[in-house]
Length: 113
Length: 115
Image (tube, rainbow over all chains, first blue to last red; front, side, top):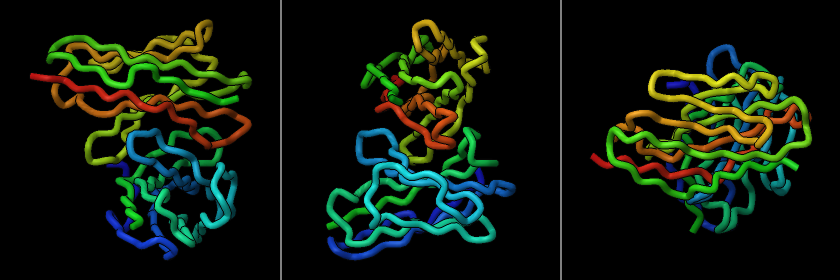
């Protein structure tokens, strides 16, 4: 086990709703990255947080937003949910923001109906 | 452009067979890292190896070995004497200096090991 935890494990929402996913990083890690993994595909980078600031973003619309707290835990917020947002959301923590090894949590499975 | 290609969508082997998973990458950066992750049915990505672009030495860890060849932009992964517990989806990923921690993943290879 990596020590990275995520909650909740599963979630069902309806289109148009908002959702918040949570991640606790491994002890000693100050950087958190979020990925979206659609069924049958590889994970896609959403964004990264380092020292409470967004530090890199992938090709995701602004309705995907995040936060990092002083204890380095993080939240991913998605507004105005769409059916295509149904996916496994993975959080990863690392020692720093520059090409460090990322250790992943178990993920949150989101289903949008 | 960053790109990782795992051409093998699915591989099936019988226990104790050796199996090689292919990974080809594209990058314009001279400083980059390559990774392999394992994703069992539970969904969590398990880190296997990280290799930087300046280190082309092959690596062996138990039944696992990795062959990195910059000349062909490949970073292949071999499992020797496969076991049923090796059944999972395996992802190759690339991280470039320009993009910090952003990992670009391949589509993954499903490995099925039958007893």
